[in-house]
View 1 (cartoon, helix red, strand yellow):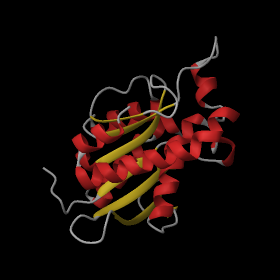
View 2: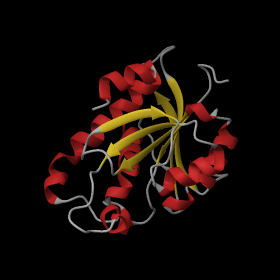
View 3: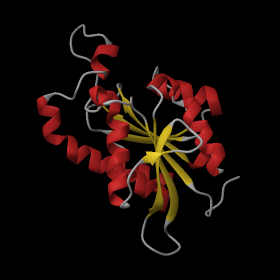
Length: 197
């Protein structure tokens, strides 16, 4: 059972490499990068896992502040479970203190849904994490919408956000980062009522 002093592991899901950086599938990395910026940290290679990490605190100074490890797995998306599990074990993070930030096809672009546990809905990053450590971790689901026409899902998620989407992307990424901070400071129910759209 976790308590208030346990660290949180915040995982942005994505694929490593500059060719994937602006893909819809990499929105988890984008949110993690913004959170790192907010806590004044820079990602560096983790010692015990194939990942980049930043350690710091989120929230106001004092008892409300939470110790966090922000992480970006440097395996490919469908192998995310290995690095996340290694980080969980190294930092001794209870599974219910893990937050996966990921793209979600079944939600309209920019909309958010926070939840604890559940299925993977065909998302390979979640599938890998759940296989490695069970489903009882938090998810921040960032809507990217469905592919247009007959475009394959794999092609859609590995494409960059469209020009219209890019106009609002910074706003939605900012909101997703806010939702993570709210989840840590005030709990899931409060974060859901404030951010679930």
